[in-house]
Amino acid sequence: MSSLDALPAGYYEQQHLPGAVNLYVEDAAVRAAEVLPDRARRSSPTAPTSPARTAKASRTLTRLGYTDVRTYREGIQDWVEAGLPTESGARAVA
Image (cartoon, rainbow, N blue to C red; front, top):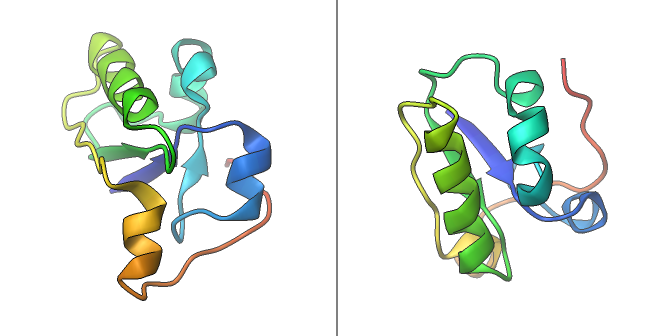
């Protein structure tokens, strides 16, 4: 599964789910193939402060042919409140 952070890079660098990659919702149509080359792999976009951005990212990925897109609407705040770990800093995309 690929977790995606759908917020701008600055927010992603502050805090994101472990292993998540940054795919800002406004760049998703252009960068999705680079960030998520396997369109059949499960993808779960999150936008910690904006369920609307999460939904938009999910719709964009589905429109681009990704077949297993799931939305984590509660986002990182729910994750943190559950006591689960987070990461910070930029992550290179291979």
